[in-house]
Image (cartoon, rainbow, N blue to C red; front, side):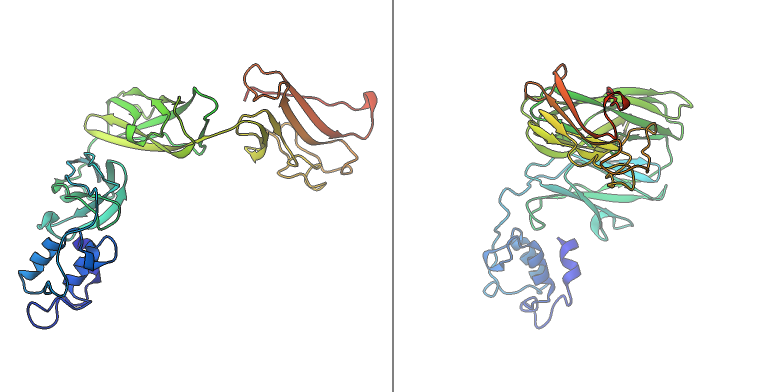
Length: 387
């Protein structure tokens, strides 16, 4: 509360005792407004009684007949304090805490000095998860942390955690990276289905031993499951790779979000996230340009390149995104006449039964081409690849 209120105070009090907190710029009013959950002080605030008692003890509150005092607001507020664990690492601290019911997010605050968590706290960040990593710290220096569970808005918060003291120190540790530039895209019409992703574990400062890599269940989207595995780091080993399997199962709904993997070894935890979307395919599909050529990213009964291939090289047409190839074995030329000399305008792939294409489906491939001549003097080659 002090973190929010103190920055808005111009003068803590003005005027005679018992009335000195009535001014709109007073400390008492600033605390009430920071505590208020709906912009109306006349219907009370969640912690109004406690704020009044604290200021009234110093005779810098405001009489109750001017500002009635009663606690109100923040239904289903967090009621319990999180239990915090602070783990030192090289030039940093890893924090984790227990889940608090009715919490929407958690604020992580840090302080330094002899007053510990009593004053001078700095807001490091907010998170909906149960872990936080603070980096760039000084080894051998003591830092102090608290975690505050928050409700539906800034005025709705539960009791903070106990103050956790920790001293970063140089010691063996590791990192994990499961990220990838591509988004894992599942389709609710194709269940079950699975994809694999590689996680790279990198040891530092002589770390050795077993490390488990698994999903954080609180971060997984509905209908998404994942299975990790463990790696063992030997002395002198630079990296280790493990394979995780992400699956869509019955009950999945269209959504998007991220999945967090947690790597655990001894007392150290590291996390890495990647994006997952759940969409609904089916029916005719139109291609988009990605990875060097047109692609239909969702399964369906057909895939149409539409106008993505129309043209002949860079200058004739021109062809969008030319040369529209994967690899460098068929580069377009720039000679000839558009819509007279040989060129490909369009590819259309469809299932013969007009149902969504799956493995084993019979399909028809139709190519719209331009040719200077006819008969045996011109020909068209069709290629396919497994990827």
